[in-house]
Image 1 (cartoon, rainbow, N blue to C red):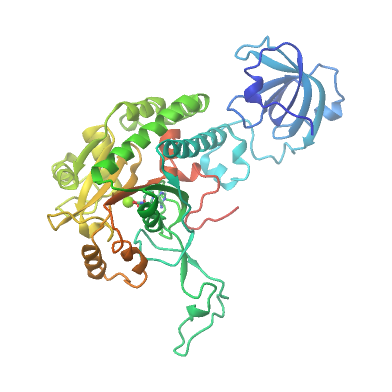
Image 2 (image 1 turned 90 degrees about the vertical axis):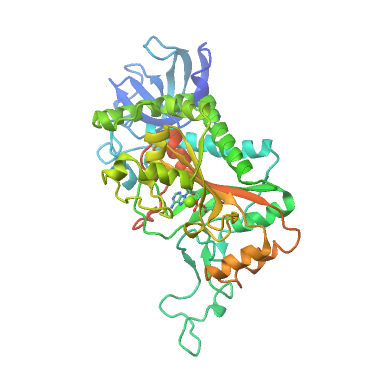
Length: 478
Ligand code: 4AD
Ligand code: MG
């Protein structure tokens, strides 16, 4: 095939009548003359111009919204407003026709609900193109950030034998015939005959395996898919999502908080520096959406300003105990506006509470730390007060929890006691506990929900619209 030039590059090339090849999809075709074409390399389209009698009517009829074209032509200065260059068409071939009656993406606004039903075609829209380019840039920046700091990228398993992380309900992995699984004498399903000789699940987190690598390599991170079988039908939850989990030897909880803030600010900066066109488009899209809301519910800051705000402000750090006091005395709590009223220390925080702290009280990102041990995982480092653990959650405006992490319990006896207190299967966790027996070290880590990060950076409002093919209760199409 002849080498094409991407629109992104054509748009910044000086037009000198040079020959170029352009390939892409038709957005609109006006007056049998002006074809607006996109190829995914940028949010911007390029205009290709055909002369009035240049082509047969039968060919012109095939230039419809959604059709795929290959064009040979010349790059020339454009007389039209708002574009520096355009393509004067010499040869035109329709690579793929698109029936205009049936093509579901018309040049008009479609609802995101509708676009989710045609998730195989939505990458052709401006919004999804922009979101996916930003998503790519953020994934790249995550690797760049950790690489610059000397962290080692570790791939932890997706199929796991341990179901004790406690982060959520799991999806089973089996090769058994569901109608007729082998059974033991007592009539129970006999997992010893299954593919792995035991029960297995899709992982909810790579953390535990990540810890074992941090105990040899020092500083590592994972970046992979994780799975949770909870019935959470919200705009913040997916059944399959991607998580970034750094794990660091010799970090205490303060070092952990420092790293979380540094990473998030680095990612925001990277987005501003590398995704300008897409963010400008998404900023406008988000503010148009804001205008449909009642004034009192509108965001005071636009998308780009919200990103800048994260870069320019230290995150507010406070303990769970301090947060409970603020929440207990808050107006929505007293007026019973919260769905879950905060009555006493020990209460689990809901996203409405997290968002109150971030959006109303402090008006900046918040890191809450030292949570009651009862509402947190077994592996979190126990504080001297006997009541709290060294957990830390980073809370973002509009999102709530974006990062969850902790200092890890590195003391053998304390960890074992906690595992038994909580009635967790010691046998399954043997290897994890053993890490505390041979050269244990203080260490910490956290998990950043990648889609929640993308929600924030793109200003989208539903997590189902920032991952190519969302999986959520009742939906695994495509
Ligand atoms: O707070 P979580 O459950 O923490 C862990 O899994 C730890 N093992 C992380 C660690 O310390 N290494 O999840 C971490 C983050 C959350 O803060 C949230 O951003 C995201 O993962 N997350 C989800 N994102 C989308 N859909 C879901 N169902 C999510 N559950 C958690
Ligand atoms: Mg959490």
